Length: 139
Image 1 (tube, rainbow, N blue to C red):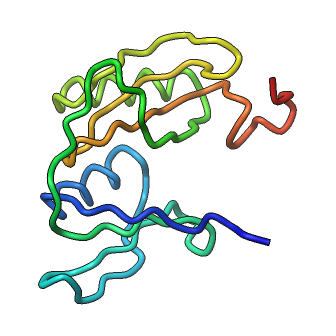
Image 2: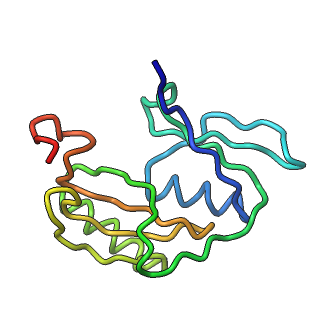
């Protein structure tokens, strides 16, 4: 058996990325350790610390994704209103890239943000993935 446990990212501004993932994704720093001439940070959603984490390390280049590039990290939220609230918060912070939109059965209602390293981050409601989707069929 295999299990996806983490995603490791080199980021140009470690503290800005930590602040982004805390503010928008509700993730928390669960471990900091020395490494790469600075520190390596583990972040997780509360209650999922032993299931899936982001490992964030200093260094690397900012990503420059095209507006039509849909490479992203996907987070499920509990309502359309939460998608709208995150989009409004992102608009004020200058990091909204996809305004809220109703998609199809696969995408649900979603918006997209750009993190400080240039990665796209999607927030969705109504996809057949994530909390509350157990009653939805996989299309």
